[in-house]
Length: 281
Ligand SMILES: [Fe+2]
Image 1 (cartoon, rainbow, N blue to C red):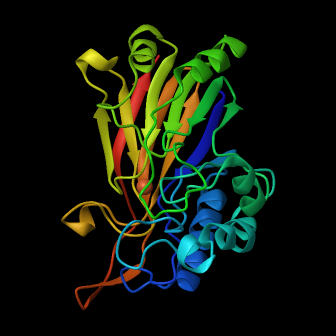
Image 2 (cartoon, rainbow, N blue to C red; image 1 turned 90 degrees about the vertical axis):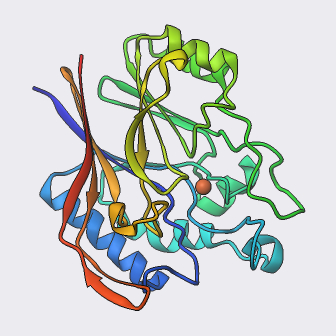
């Protein structure tokens, strides 16, 4: 049976301040080592990054680094860290999150050629990476991004271009209460759409878009920065693996072992997997 593995990560927030006692030099080294160990354990064909590499644009506290200092942590991550993290032959996609409000031209410039919205064919699957926070780009005011939802016409056009592929819809975030009727119609009508994946809430969980919204599984991809859960050990830094076969698809959140400091408590977690998902065709 043909089997393809991919890795999906989001909300890396490669920021100067760091979290859980991990500064960004350490974070970059941790993530590089985690990806390398993951590849050594079982090679993956692609790495999909779903946004928030930074707080380049940010409405609160010290505000975004790009408008205050002209500094882009995203650029630093894309040019200094990412090339060291990607094993040879692995396909990478790097879409923007709500903390990266650069227009497409600027996005390509700072990331070395990635696109805000993208797609990739992996085996018998088409992954469509939408730009749901693509409003009010290249801003002059601080904000946490303008949500515009998934582009149903673009998804439809890509699905028409690849009529034999099953489809996984990815984005930095899907706000199911703010998506267009056209997008919800796609979820309701297109059996080829097998599931959705997104980050942004810094939570690992398997959920559902809702009975009236196509009833599709939605996989949350966690974070590699700080948890969106109150109980932070419920979702420690990690990433999601996805295994694609012709019979189905499985996914789990992978939590590598690391030593963190939280509320002055130092602890080391066991390596773990959680929030597993299995879909049989
Ligand atoms: Fe986000």
